[in-house]
Each structure stands twice: as C-alpha cells, then as structure tokens.
Amino acid sequence: MSLLGVVIEKIVAAVSSQGDGKCIPLSEIAPENIDFTTIARELMKRREVMIYYDISEDEYYICRRANTCRRLTVQEIVDEMREKFDSEPVPKPIIMDFIRERAPTKYEAIYNMLLNDGVIEEVNISGMVFVRIVK
Image (cartoon, rainbow, N blue to C red; front, side, top):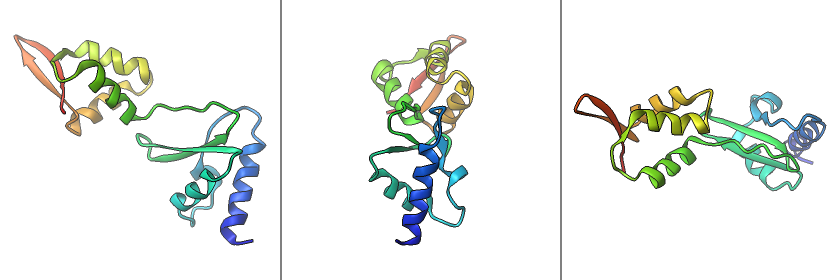
C-alpha cells in the first residue's frame, strides 16, 4: 500500500470513530506535508466519508457520510441573492437580513467580502443606502 493509501486509511478511521457527528477540518487530521487537494480527491472516492471545500474558510471538511454536515458556501449565498433580488437596488437592511439568515455569525464579514469583491455594490438613493447585485 502506498503512503497516500495509508494516510487515507488513517483519515477515514479517524472520522469514522467520531461519535458526535461533527465535520472535521482536513487540516486537523491530515499530515501538513501532503497536498490537501490530492487527499480530497482520494477521499471523494470513498463511500463512507463525505468531503467538501468551504470557499469562505478556504478549508476542506470531512465527515461520515451518514452525518449531515452541510455547510453553506459563499457562492451559494451569492447564487440565491442573484436569483431572489436580480439586479434591482434593494434596501441594505433587507440584504443584511438575507445574509444573516444564512450565516448568523459571519454575516457582516460576508457582506463586506461581497462588497470588496465587487459582487454587490452600495447605491445611495435619496439618502438611503441600497444594494445592487452585480451580474
């Protein structure tokens, strides 16, 4: 068995032994000197574990497949915003509430990230701040 195979087996065993159903960042259980992308590709071939990449945290997560460790990504928030609000200006509090419903603890950081990345833009109309989703 190759070194990568041994590492994969140990990661799967570590995740399978988790009793609390928690998703684990791959960086906590994988050796630092191995490429996480390669490990993730190999782990995706396994039926007993589920792995996904969280864009906002720049981190791979792994959990047992039986567990539901669904985490919302920033891209999913953007897609929902584009679908719901199109490109019409929307009052800023409505956008903030929309993001807060999906990411209660990081909504301000996500809003600022979307603003800085040019996904949304603030428009001042008659002294009120509106947000427009950039297509």
